[in-house]
Length: 202
Length: 202
DNA sequence: AACCAATCAGACCGAACGTTCTATCGCTAA
DNA sequence: TTAGCGATAGAACGTTCGGTCTGATTGGTT
Figure 1 (cartoon, rainbow over the protein chains, first blue to last red):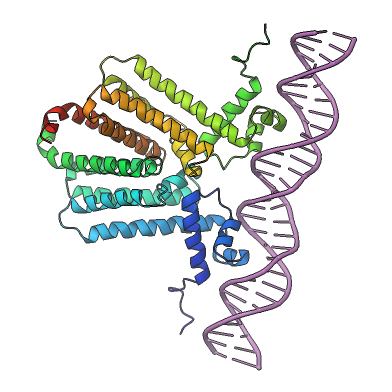
Figure 2 (cartoon, each protein chain N blue to C red; figure 1 turned 90 degrees about the horizontal axis):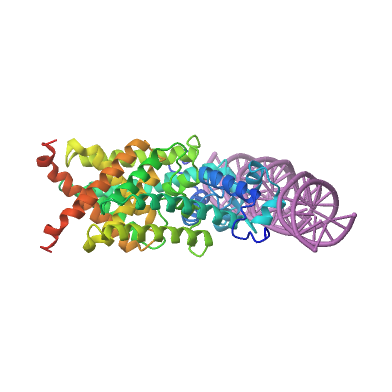
């Protein structure tokens, strides 16, 4: 039965739409680009667009989910090549640093979206909040394997450095930002490994 | 001569416009709010608006300059009560932490603007870049009084933590974010003070 | 051959966008 | 008093916004 393809139905047009939207939304912002622009660059008609996405908001959500999928893939790669417990964290940090230095880097898609959708009840805001929670949870789990006692604050520290690096990466020299970020992560992981002795005095 | 008031001419209407724009732009974003909304809430007519601001972009620039003025005032306060060299840095960090926890906090106005105006040639982008450079320079100068050798990377580290804290402050628990931020700053300043002995081996 | 879903082409909708216009009002200086 | 000027009010500009609708054309399945 060839008609039973509801699991594998990428629908060429939908793919083009999503690819185009991802590129333009990330590069130029969400409110700044209209539906006309996207269907023009995707070489697709209005009717086709509204067949696949009931509204622009649905396309925006699909865009964020696509970026989430890509980032999750990056994390999974770092997880797959895990030798010692701290390696995945360093691998993720290196991946972030590499991302910042890559051409066309425009910051964190989710932080950018948060700036445009401050209303916490808006689906877009909730989508990005969910992504951030997933990332924090992932880092916390990894951090717990380095030092259980301070996993939570250490993970929050990691994410804070990441957020700062991603935010500043396209506003000043990406190389310097990456260096600062990696130095910060190294320091964080070093302190977290050494803390066992000093923390006992508290 | 009462006509010679070109230095002190706030022009009630202009003040209302700027105050309203600052409040709404910061709370809801820039592209998301139109001129209609601002003149309605400021209780001012279109003609009056366009008398004081040639275009919406000019109002946006005035908004950013206003926020810059406020932040500069905060830094000046921290500078005024300087006892030891590290005190101003801690005062600034505390002020940031307090800001994050204050009601209505919506992140960094300049990072939010950067998300909406990625074009580096746009006046708005250049305005926020100038602000960020000023802040980095300020922190670098202060950091140089703690330890000259590592002032530059330490200042970048400080700013990165600030950016991360400001970005995340309205996306998760502000109290936790503030704590994480202050812990990070404390660690940074402590390391920077202790580094003299360990850095010699490099 | 007949069908059906997807795509295309493009006119069309009301609303909102940033901006300009005309005209009136109220104050102050000459 | 009057001339001038900034603020007021509000209609209107043309464009773009997100979204709908009609109708023709395609291409694979039955």
